[in-house]
Length: 396
Image (cartoon, rainbow, N blue to C red; front, side, top):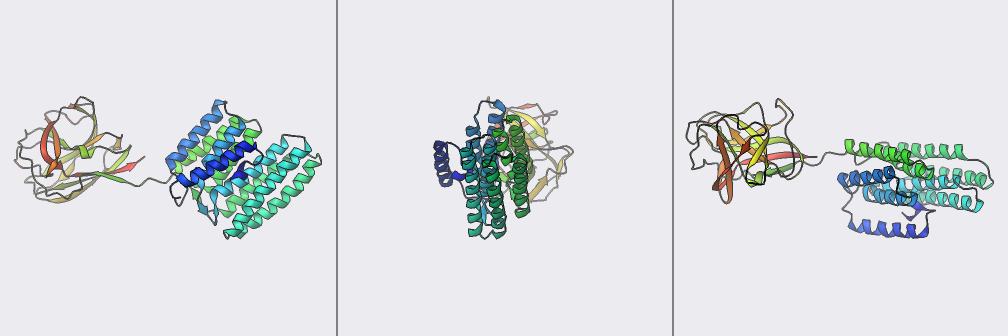
């Protein structure tokens, strides 16, 4: 990856080489559609946008930050070659050509074009070694174009239009050779176009344009990122369903345990409740409550309409949130999920607990609309029992 920033001061190239080694050692195994995580990519893109929008970063600092991002987020093998190499080496070509446009000194122009050809040659060799012969052939053509363009540039002839045409050619190569490939959910060619745009515009003194390209990639990476795997928390539902030994008033009552604490921000997609042989039909709801720091919790939201639990229908019941009358349930890490009912005078109706010496069930009972958003509950404890409720969460 030292070739990614060919033409930068040697200390920066050396620093980047060290950075690549460190990232290679620390990074988790690459996924099928982008190395690292989508969250890490979005954080790096957000930071890069901040650098470009704030105006306090130099061009070398921007190049370094972007090169680090490329290695961390795109170092997967795609079509026989590392995506980071494809992006980095093609980007290196554009960057060196753009640097050559910014000087009239022939020795510097010659060095920039030599650097661009070196990046093209590097990628062609890696493509051939990986079996990406079509890409290698394309790069041979790019190398020939660079040689001819460089000769004219050294002779003092203008080459701006040819440089623009070459950028378009490189973009079309990525689009054609990686037409079905995505990186963190974003089409490969869109990732390349946005990242290549950043360096070129920075070198042209157009920081706002570079920021726009970074923002566009951030939007794409946010909206197209593959969904995270669902998370299940709460009870493992292996305990035998029993009733609590306590008696309850015929009013709204809610139950929960610490195991029903939400582990990450996201959306609840289903509730699974294991019940025993309840003697009566019960209307169930599920609430999301938020601890207040004084032992109480406040209701954030409650499902509606009620979910039915038929009498004598023992087993595990799954209640999806897709059929609710409103979008539910967005949660934050630290929220708690409860199972609720509207109260009954029938003894032993609440049969969704299991004896667990290491757990404590909490409950709240009151008349009125206790499950409305904003209502504060003051729980009481029932030591030695767990609530047989399991929750499925789709993380953000």
